[in-house]
Length: 481
Image (cartoon, rainbow, N blue to C red):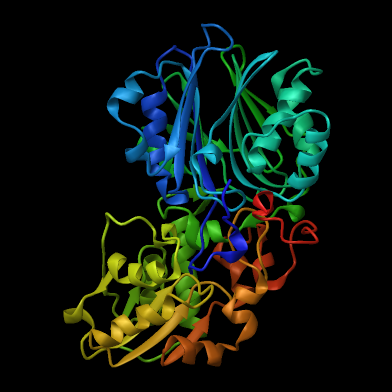
């Protein structure tokens, strides 16, 4: 399956595993085109591969259409492909890999045709016990076609379905076995199911358009297809959608709110600013982070700028709080995918200039406050600081809208092993010198809950305290070794 390993990735910046989108039209209309536009809105969550699987609930149980491939949504699909995909129920996925090789075999959705009929599934997150479950299933005859933990979930559901009264019961039993982060959408011959892990690491919401129900990673995808937001899937909840009963909810696996652990980086970086997650506006959360930076780490300057895109809202918040004007210092090439798709370090370094360019007229002769969402390895920040200096900035003060990364993430974010984290090996002053800034300050750790109005969050990558016990070794990418 190739030699991709997360722990060896050279590029800087953070990335999320994927986005999921599912739809069930009770009136029988084809859903493939709507899923396509939903995935288009979730493209920021994964740019390596994507796919759509649809089925006709009024047709044979094993009748389905599946198309998936490497590339962006508008590269993988065209009008002819979409028009050939007939079905009133479907699931879609856009992927960035954190466990398993980046190859077509690992693209989702996964579709299984088995004794009970059809099972289609898409997964956002990362399991911490996938390896032992995979070994257990292999010992009883399972033959795996991919190196992703999502296939383990699909096999568990299929096996449980053989001894369960309903597919939602099978999903529930599978959820009892898996540990870690998962937001799932599951398509059966007559039902659409959504499940979210008890900690709520990854987002998942429910929408409705006319007589069709939609499940999506973010509310921005609902807006894109004109669907009305209904509510979020609660952490630990399993939702079943069917024309027989509409929405049915199973909250028996929900835990006390104090045990929730939503990924704070959904708000800081991953999610689109026009999304709401669990009742909190992503945009407002970033504005607050910028305000807190201005309060806690002020500096005299002439202009506040953000590193596109996630740094922009925080920069606006810093400007609003400090009274220092906000400006646009960077032009972003909208036709360049996120730079993490470059596999080599040399490509990564040059791609910073391909992706961003500084506006000399804006920054020349000015003291600049540059707001970014994070510093992981530091291999990008120094180039962006240099870009501003080359454009004529007299001072560059860097402010980061998150605390320093000190621990890896095992729940669907590619925060790497500690040895690769610049803040683990260096003090703030040392990092400041490494990236060539005049000053550097991070968001105070105590401010994190305030950015999301006290919502229970996971901050394990900052302090090592995870909502559940992490694995004893770094399991990300191990299937390929």
